[in-house]
Length: 228
Image (cartoon, rainbow, N blue to C red; front, top):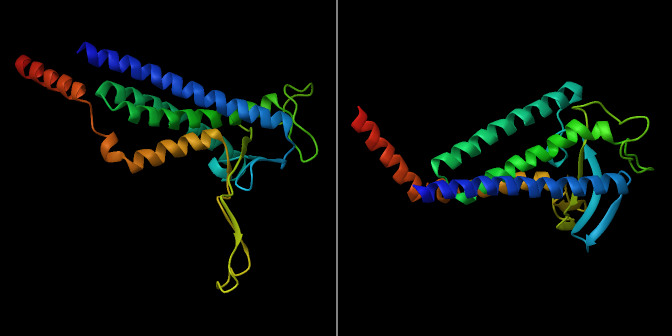
């Protein structure tokens, strides 16, 4: 029983550390890009396949959007509600004795959601508008570029792993440019993607519960039976 309690304490600490590290890296890179790059500016990191390319989007991950002002507000509210549900789910996983890796992966999803929520809630309040000719300023004298809930999400990671042209003999696409992977994203998006796809890929192994949790459940069942 004590081992199970100790494990749960460690898992709670891992959740906090995971969320903190992802948020720290995500917000540090976003603020660095926002205050040092003009909109559309690029900087090559590794030749031809990894660059920082500053763009902003008012909507979802990987540059997807949900139209209009109310779409933006609804999306942010949805993210906040979803984050609360994820926190509750993580708490349930810990209580039920889920594997530590499963808890870390769900924590990555939570951290990614929180990272983009911060952009939407506060970036419009504390930064001036980024343009193709000027760098944004933090806490400008005349105020930020948008009210709360209306901030734009900062994206910057661009990984054109394949950048070539379709062969001329390919119908319709022949001679046109082909790029993979085209969307520009951020660390928060990456955390969500890693968490979701790893859970899907290894769901059978991850949804097995620890022996300690199964033992605790058996004890609880026996006590309940005796009381009845």
